Length: 244
Image (tube, rainbow, N blue to C red):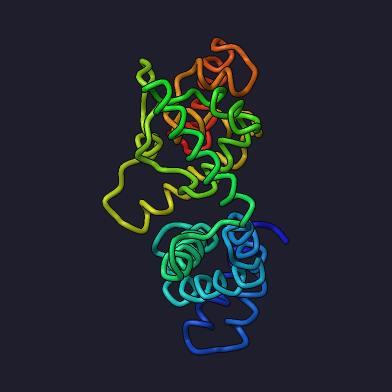
């Protein structure tokens, strides 16, 4: 099925569903269930079964189907994803602090204890490599364990103190319309997901963890020059994907 036909089919189903046609609503949900499952997978390991995440995400899909308007100027899937994510995050938040697996929680406690001990001994924050050595983990394991109990990305986080410092949000076109702003940010997240693992790690460490290029290079086992070059490629790729 071509993209144009698929979009047209979605619009017809949405119109019928919004007019009370339950069969159309069920078909619309079924056709877009892959989207729900993709989003749900992002939250695996947060203390909720995958099947439950899918059910909760489906509620977000239902809300999207009921509130979508073609005049928003975006395709249904782009509009739906923030609502699916929001529904899952609300559930996790209302159910208590976002839960992580027992293993990750145990690692997190070990890391925090090791960090406190290091600060008492040296009166300064430990480097990731030092923390990893003390905990008997790799630097990547340290990053993932800490990241598991934190939001995936913050659009307000910045890159160190380098000349090219910028927030992720600054790479997103400004928009006064709340819904369009949400989809702009979603488009950025989708663009990031297309990057290879190393590039995603660079974004995570530089933007989210606020590490320097040298610290990032040490963790990834590459040179600072390589990190700098990769950043430029990443920015170019994201700007192309976002048409900015």
